[in-house]
Length: 368
Image (tube, rainbow, N blue to C red; front, side, top):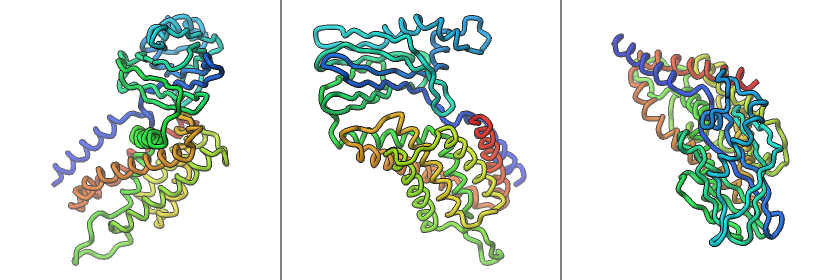
């Protein structure tokens, strides 16, 4: 038994140590454009500075610290690279792309993005071909949000060989719903902080019922009704702040929202061991409001569809909910198997909670 417990402890430690320290690990570029005249489209493309550095070797002295001066000096290299990997054309002609020199840096979940303004001269329907960064990054994609005279259209380009047709018409309600539902699912799956917070909620339950020989405890014995109420409370809470933020009815600094989410992960993990707060529904709802602010940050990066604004919010909320259900369904059998042996569960519960607690503290420090 001791040998089995030791092996489980080692396995869990290796598993959690292999997790990325950054809460959101993905390679995503954003292209946001707006039609300003019959043949002119103005906007910007945002690319991960880390990805650009890795691909183009922007750090000339190779000291690992990329300065703003080095980025400025590499501007022509960056635009030359984009000239090759971002093409816009009609059936008969290549559209002209002008790169503005007024570049800047933005922050997305602790990752620095280079914002490159651009102007595209193109009339009528045209095609977009994007192939940057695919050869040097994993799971890279470009999120496109294009406002046209008669509507708005969105797309996800995750294949360097794909060609997207930018038509002078807006997406349908169904297309908009599917696009934002997919983005909601992806956001929670790639957001390690959201995933671990959900896991800590599950750790508050005692997954096997006490036998007749066991003394009754104050633990939250698992039952489906309690779990459904808990998930519903979290969903309603983050849906409220997500919707209010998306409609610009409330405004909270994204930085401090992310700090609050990190605190929620650390506190919930600690509470799974200490049970300071036994009515975890109150804790879940309170922290759900914080997580909604984080989801709203992701939604604001995508932008709401101007022609289907409510559909965008509903689709994203539904996507987050579907993603949550998938996480819970995946974690539940594992937790139930672990709790079959009380001696094993007494080791694994504090071990998992402790690792999540340390990750939460690290994210608080990183985001402040």
